[in-house]
Image (tube, rainbow, N blue to C red; front, side, top):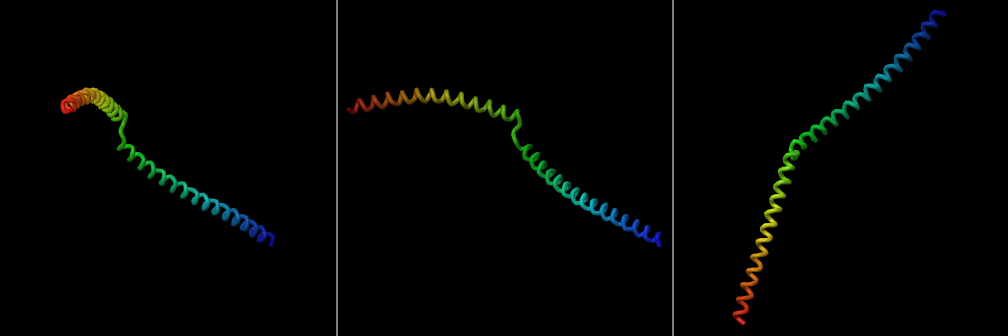
Length: 102
């Protein structure tokens, strides 16, 4: 009878240990699945960012744009000074024409 009690006690302990171990494995498996899902989501987001970055200008492109803007700025200053001379000439012609009619 004592042997049956010991065997029963050992089976109860083994069952408790097995249940505890299987529950912790289930929790770990669930946690691992969650982490895998997050990792997949981050991989997709990173892929999207990398794809978007391919279409953005690089350092050389920005430098070329800066040079072109500087060139356009110089051309506008030249045109502004030339237009100032044209405006003065037009005013003189207008003053002359208005002065002759009066």
